[in-house]
Length: 125
Image 1 (tube, rainbow, N blue to C red):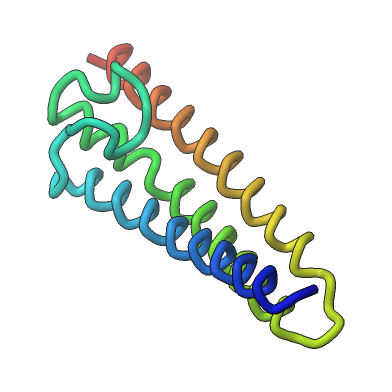
Image 2: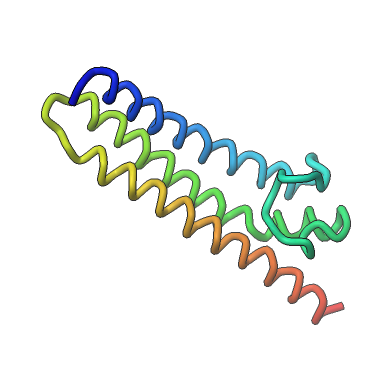
């Protein structure tokens, strides 16, 4: 693997790790009510952005799954970066794909949990 490709893939792995951490922080802050419903920030869904209370409540419900998914994805992405820095280690690709899959599946589950929390609140209220 040439140095330009290695640096590009390393940058991609680092960006994936940083993006995963940033997603976890944004969902957590939205759950605390420190980020108001706005455009593309937060979990997707029109129902989640109905009002500030629903936005915070749904993000608070999704926070544990989000932290789990983003932390595992960040560790896998950083592991990919470390494996890529080792001479002759090709496991970086497996770890990078694992990081991306964990992030996508975990955020899908967190979004499902956020929507379910709104349904739970509608049924209880």
